[in-house]
Image 1 (tube, protein in one colour):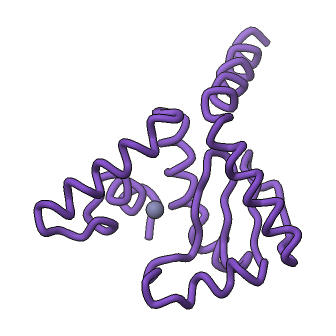
Image 2: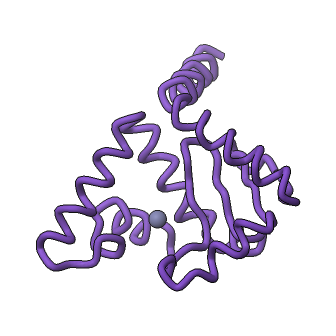
Image 3: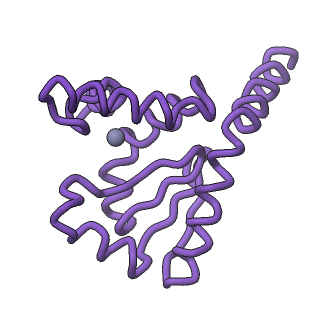
Length: 138
Ligand SMILES: [Zn+2]
């Protein structure tokens, strides 16, 4: 019982620590829902997919890798099949948000910038993405 209470306290702390980013995700989730998206609560995260803009975003040539994006405890994706395929990967990003909180964005951007300056791919060689790929089982 005491262990369960401690676990619950840690989960609440994790949600609060990431709340500012999750709030941004919730705003975008509302926009996606207004554009025809559907929301599901999956394993502690809100997944939103199917909105017209999310589907068309993935077709832009500049956005080669877009299948889903994680903003705190909100995951936005093109469609629910894509979210299911990327779920483990995006959940690694959720854990990264829980580790770094609001610092995750500047750290992620700095890591991408550092990769780019060294002539590497700002997305594929970003250590946060490498961790997600190594952990997601893909
Ligand atoms: Zn990723």
